[in-house]
Length: 291
Image (tube, rainbow, N blue to C red):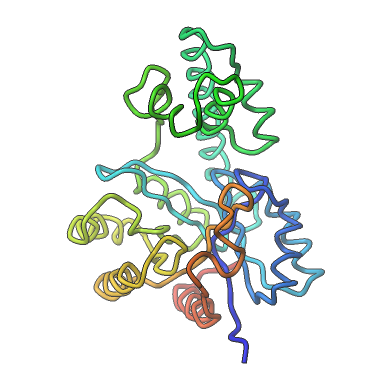
């Protein structure tokens, strides 16, 4: 008997995935998934197309996005789920995401300039062409260096030039977790901390962080994720219970950039059961959240 499954963490060509929003929905329907969320990085651009396709395919669709933030233990990512349609409700979020995208552009331009100063014939435009409309980042500059045979592989490109502290590295300017949570909550979204055990923090340190994020409006932890092992899941469930948080789960599907992660089934046999979606819906109803 097949267990009804969902996937609440998916990326498309609207950010750094390789499948279009509509293609993802069709693929999810073919796989028999009952509900999915599109959670592209720092943008809402793919939601309309995906939602339109979901209506035709008869699959539950959840409007989402993912925001990266800065903590003492590295980047913490937050998923906004059930983002409303009304422009007046999401205007501040849209404005903030546009600011994030502008800072990313400035960072990429700065890295391109640093590489040029090191004598490499690279440009932001070349990296953007390589990205093919997806989010441009260090992997694309690394690939350019590989193609000109300046390095033997991407790992060497990061080790010699693009890694933190290297000559062509440019720091990312990220918002604080509380700011991301506030933006998403003010827009009317449910907020989940994505893959919390990928943060370079001990359970005690993560607990310390959650003590500040719960009052800020954090709703849930993404316990079920492709990079979480059984121990990670157990720790997330225990933390969620301690802080009164809900549980979410998803594959973090990107397509070709992460070939070992499949839509709906993630990596390592991950399957997120429909009851996770049902519990979230009960929570939203109890909190008075509206679509």
